[in-house]
Amino acid sequence: MLKNKTALVTGSTSGIGLGIAKALAQQGAHIVLNGFGDADGPKSEISALGVEVDYHGADMSKPDEIEAMMAFAAQRFGGVDILVNNAGIQHVARVEDFPVERWDAVIAINLSSAFHTTRLALPAMRKANWGRIINVASVHGLVGSAEKSAYVAAKHGVVGLTKVTALETATTGVTCNAICPGWVLTPLVQKQVDAKAAALGISNEAATQKLLGEKEPSMQFTTPEELGALAVFFCSPAGNNVRGVAWNMDGGWAAQ
Ligand code: NAD
Image (cartoon, rainbow, N blue to C red):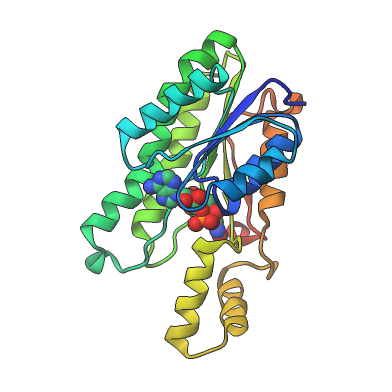
């Protein structure tokens, strides 16, 4: 379905981003990976799916590096047809204790990076009259949780950016939507499970159950594969007129 399209997925060396990159590659899209850590493993996993894959290590907190990444994608693949803004970090602290430097980093990586990639990708998408922008927000783009001020502010911002981008492209073949996962067991969440286990002196298993039980009625994690399938739907012809939605996959979290 996505043969001859190129997808750039930020933060795709791990977790949800890698899951979405694989799902898009399974539909035939060439992939530009981005993110920190090992890139060779993810590159060979994608390459095994029979598509072209390359990697750019831009730091999503740095607009000049984001510009270099978008220029790299244009040069290597002729442009970006599908942009998935996924890179993100978390920091947990009460507002009055929140380190200013962590606030700035969360806003830069989780929110401003999506503005930069979007503004740089849109001209070519408009010209081609086809494009898909998928913003990985969070259920925290819809509701709040204590001690996550920067993350919740950034994710609400991403949902707002999604709506405005969708409105500005509404009469074109470009769509923009957000995905709002609840808990997904990735390194980002494993850190929170570990912190809970240490703080309460309980086992990893008990901390996992507690984490799910506090927020997620289904008591189960959403998987990167499920999120990848939703991204594929947004890219399909059935998604042509799906614009500006913030679609939660959260085990009932936001329904409460
Ligand atoms: P993860 O830690 O597994 O992956 C994050 C990715 O972003 C990694 O590839 C990492 O290298 C990359 N990254 C981090 N900082 C970066 C930077 N400055 N520049 C470039 N890349 C950077 O986390 P994840 O859980 O897969 O999170 C992916 C996205 O999904 C995030 O936006 C997160 O907020 C969102 N999300 C996660 C969950 C969850 O439960 N895991 C729930 C809702 C939303």
